[in-house]
Length: 135
Image 1 (cartoon, rainbow, N blue to C red):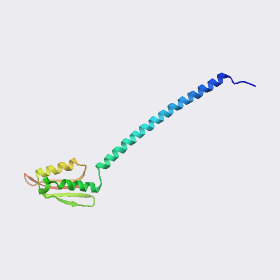
Image 2 (image 1 turned 135 degrees about the vertical axis):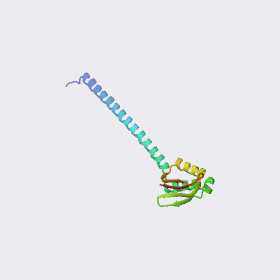
Image 3 (image 1 turned 180 degrees about the vertical axis):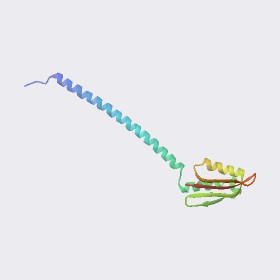
Image 4 (image 1 turned 90 degrees about the horizontal axis):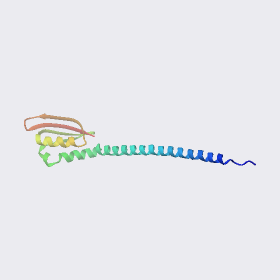
């Protein structure tokens, strides 16, 4: 009967150890790639959530516009609000320039999609306004 050479066993164990170390490095590399992909998808999900909050639904746009136009500073502006299927139209035949500035500032600082904006000067202190905000 032949005996197994101890050098063969040592060589086999060395090869097995090298194989395990190599596989470990490959798994670590794959884990790092998956971690980076997870971070990217998490960042994308947060961006999409913020965009969803920013560009809101019809109800949110309507309530925001009604909140803006019902303020005390705009009460005497005689704003006419016309609700359509996909937009809201704000019309005033004569609005004071200070009120106009306040309204436009609030519309532009908000997250609204302004379809049309038409301002016509009537005199030094008044203007005509037509704004269409869509969702």
